[in-house]
Image (cartoon, rainbow over all chains, first blue to last red; front, top):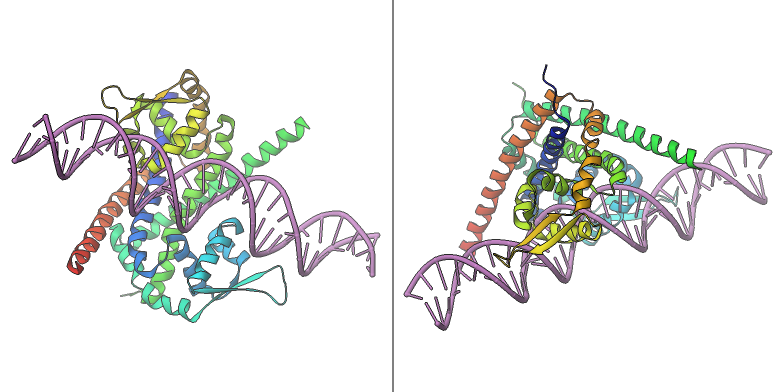
Length: 164
Length: 164
DNA sequence: CATCATTTAGTTGTGTGCAATTGAATTGTG
DNA sequence: CACAATTCAATTGCACACAACTAAATGATG
């Protein structure tokens, strides 16, 4: 049986978190080039994808789809509005809520965006099944990490309460 | 034979890039909690990992290990220096270069960091082999994306030259 | 040796990402 | 109805990422 020396865990740790980070940034790099045509950044593209798929949404719902809070979305949406792709309107039913609506121009941009996924998929060198499998793996990882983060946070708060 | 409608590619695209993004940020969330003890952010921890493994390095080499440029590293290293974990010293041999050296305190921090990888690995819910396989997959993806980014950039510059 | 190209850090500006706070609007409870 | 708790977006402050640029030092070339 092969046990891993404690010190080597530091190297393994470096490798896995680094790999994920690197892949994420490499993805960002390709998107940056491909999306330059559309005048979008990668996070902005993600917002547009959600709006194209689900239609107009309040900021809150948008954030749930994207795992982003208003601290990130507010300035991002302002830039999309400045670019003429979306409008932000206070909901009449609930004035706390802000509806994000596609403009004509924003809706029209979808046509030009249709070419993006194919170029990205091509860049990965993965076929559809490989992408699907990797995605499942990553989603599993994310779920586990989120659950663990909750536990860690709960544990922290518990020890904080003991101090109080 | 099942062909995927073009419009559906947008949804698939959303899913794979989003999954990677989400996993990366979920990782960051767990690291944020775990590293709070050490007073490090996640990118700062990556820098310390490289220094612990390779010893003192010039900023350039550090950037190659981490795929980060001076625009990111300079302010980050200043914060590590302010925290007393590293020193930055102009190289005597080549005064363009800045050597990043661990302080006593920085080197000592390694002891406390030894517990981090195990906590992270536990949080993933993956065993060593699964981590290794995922890492290989991600590195493969990163390599493909980097190569594709180079091609895209080259193509852009080509068309730019035609315009000139 | 003088000059030009390259290398290396640093700086600036833009755009996320997230914690913490604020303030307005809504909901739940008595 | 009054009032406390909650919800939602926005804002503030901090820390990356990265492109573009600057400045200093080095190396290469004629």
